[in-house]
Image (cartoon, rainbow, N blue to C red; front, side, top):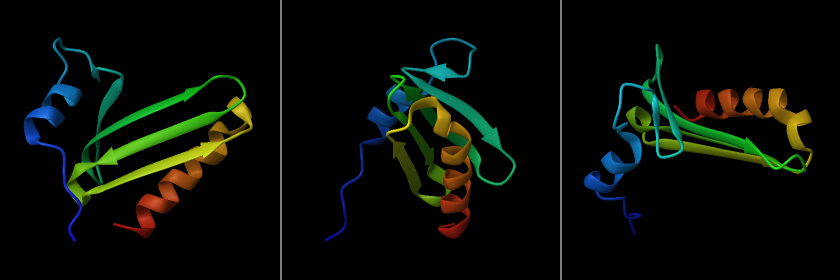
Length: 88
């Protein structure tokens, strides 16, 4: 069975900024040469670190979490890039 997708209107609400900034409801919007428009959110509570990247052009999202806090930021970024490359 094909997984259901979020309605387009819901995605627009989550990703379109009401102002000229590249920030919308917690998501940072950024243009990538390779993927076009991407959305991401990263964060830490000092004990854990998580990163999620949504790439609509290839119908993919990558979520990487760790329990080592901000110390893992560089490693998480590298893993995210490699996962996107491997699945695009």
